[in-house]
Image (cartoon, rainbow, N blue to C red; front, side):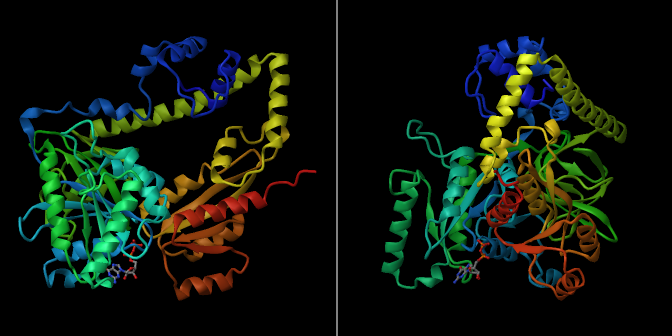
Length: 527
Ligand code: GDP
């Protein structure tokens, strides 16, 4: 509808809706009622083009003629320090031929493994696994078929394990007791099993874990469900083959398919990006359907790529990529957004046309948002204006916040309204990979209320540079680093710019808490 949320909320209250919040769920009848108020029909709305659905029209319907079996795409979740990275490293290393690239493995967002026994392919999404990667997890659910939940054999189920389980239950299919054909797309591993050498102790620990998982609503194998719990050690490699074969079997049972005919236009997701000073922008892409070949044109958000070169995850040049393959693409006009979908188009002209149209739609949406808000203000009756003032006073009483939820809830009001000056706390985000920087930005941007808001003025991959410190000094920004470790250069820069606040985090949850605390400290006191 291109209508500002506040305006919608007021209109709904005027219509007699009670307790309206952004989470309010409307029936079809009520939607039609609200739409009438804006002189829209439901059909107009659902078929209207907007910047987020524009590229949908390029997607072709599934073509059963071209469908063939494809390997599963797998994400890994679990509590911090429970062994996700080590597990991924083991899997990745197992696939690097000795001597090739000196055995060095690189982090490019995803990688492929050929299992030793059955020679089957598994594709792993190598996302940084720390807590609350909101957008990345959502993306993980969109472009993964299976999830491995990693649980440390000493700690067992912890806070972030529960968080991951919540996400799994919301986004992943689990066995449904009412449907005998349903299959859970989850495998649990009890990690670091080398720490428990005695078999009977292991068994006891495994039973405790299984019970904890059942209590969390996971249908565990042997306890009425189908989710296997496999004891592994990524350090010694124990049972890693069992894990891999379990994933292969599950992939086969799910009978995953995609069009792998070269006539099928390609679709996929960007999972990682980086900039090489010599080569330029490189994006790691996971192929969802179709066959990608050098020379193809790919549309992605506000940019496109004429595929100049395709490398596999081991930086070996390849000529074509099939569904569930991981490719590093060179030939981008600009850096694409991590998590965005890519869609193949016939030529450069079409790519440019769609990008122009999308940018125009974005502009229109922004303009209309502003206009509809202004109109709304102009049309408010004196009585409604008074009511609004009262509401404002009321919400002022409830304005202090302690949790990020409250900030987001209160963040509906526009900044600067009625003479209030909204204080902006500036941040520069630096992270280990584009995906984590993006996830942090997405988590921080909604943190605001009428008085204070979080403003991300800069971001980037890698350790903070002198430019970051200069920018921070001139804009009074704080620099937050995520998963970057220590460096002497940064210590030196910190000494050169003592006024710049620099903080380091390895758990995103702690990072958000810290920002919330800073915002809270910046609220004006109530007298
Ligand atoms: P993540 O935070 O979940 O990615 O956890 P990491 O993979 O970084 O592992 C956390 C710690 O556990 C590190 O010190 C690892 O060396 C250790 N670790 C990981 N896997 C194993 C394992 O199989 N056995 C043992 N003994 N330690 C492990």
